[in-house]
Length: 166
Image 1 (cartoon, one colour):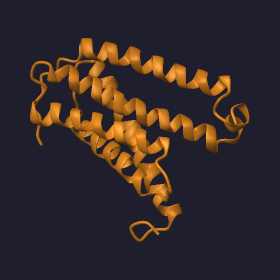
Image 2: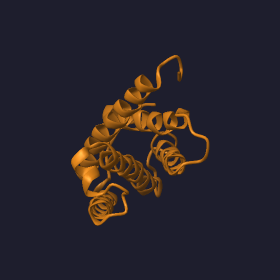
Image 3: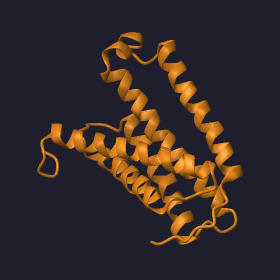
Image 4: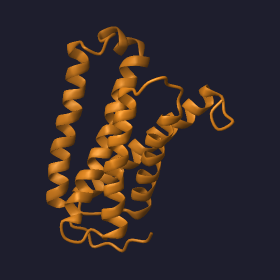
């Protein structure tokens, strides 16, 4: 039991938070490419992605796992994004710090989704049962390159005229 929920129910909550975070993050990323920052979508992305990373620590584990390290990195970049956006209001260098950290957090969430897809979806698992095979590396490489390109473009284009509310 985790927070009064079965592990299965807790896993479902964790996965739903992750999927909402990814969907909202993609909306935010595409808006950033158009120099926009939709406050509701942005808050939804940040909150669900923080919750996804935080809830990952409550799964039973007897040692530090790669998922714990990814979660720690995600929470660190999310702290930067939240600070840059709500505390420093994207002033000066905080604009690009926000964009880079938000894109990095979204990438990490998608990275984990790809890992989970190769673990849980039979046809993908058959292609890369140990996640050391070329199909897994190619999928992760494509995701990484897409996020590097999107992040670069977002840093260049994201100059919103926005009113932020905490």
